[in-house]
Length: 356
Image 1 (spheres, rainbow, N blue to C red):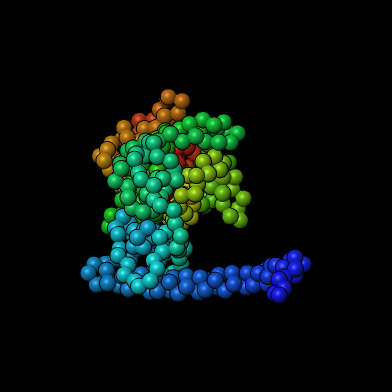
Image 2 (image 1 turned 120 degrees about the horizontal axis):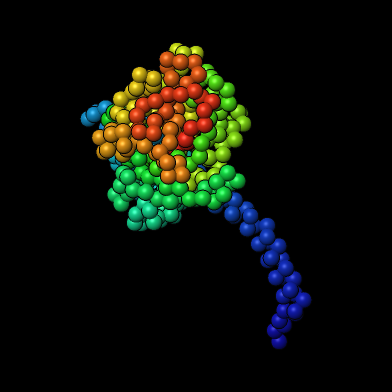
């Protein structure tokens, strides 16, 4: 007669199997995780090699020296609105960005797992997440220069009020955006506030020393590492929008205290005279930039530069110091013309930022 297992024996076997599973599972998961990491590392190396080769091939045909490119969902690069095909065996990333120096990959943030790109409908009705995803993908056909959208600002100063922003620029062109000495402020997908959102002085004292980088206005707009800027304007933006605002190289003009144009990296910035009118004024020394698409479409007319505060045409600040003075910054007058005034004056603030 065959004898079966007793209940106690079966329980003992189950307990032993459970203990083995508890010991083995983490080991197996670690092996799988290490294998995936090694695979991702190898895929990344192959992809970056292919990127360098693609840029080299492009340079054989025409000069091509991008500074930053975003990775499209198909693994190709979106560089200045132009798709660069990357041919590589194995897995391609589906998102992220690449920073280059003289055609060679310098820094990268690659994503191998991505959400589907939401379909674009219009700038006014799409969420910021949808807009950001399509800008990075290079699928911005539904978004046109001059299109407007409402944005609600938070914080004590703005109390949840809504303001209008518009697409001020979509292109890079071959006007210098690929140059290291060029301001990025009118390159790529630029959004600006249609009208003045508040008033603020450029500096708390009557000086233009150090220009835009040293100004209290810059600190008011941006959270500045190591300097303690209040970042009132940046912090007032919706978090969903902040996730897509790019760091921007900002070249600004100098006053009599300084002899060379100044450079900073900012999330939010003010415009320069050339970005509005297409040429520099006698007060603004920033020539290393281009005219924004919106103002170019308006034929650089002064009417396009008029901005309102509470329904009244109001002076608004530009970012460059007045090159002929020690205490003035450039601004735009109530009739849309070039102007300059003392830095301590509370003039209008109508900032811009780049998405990507």
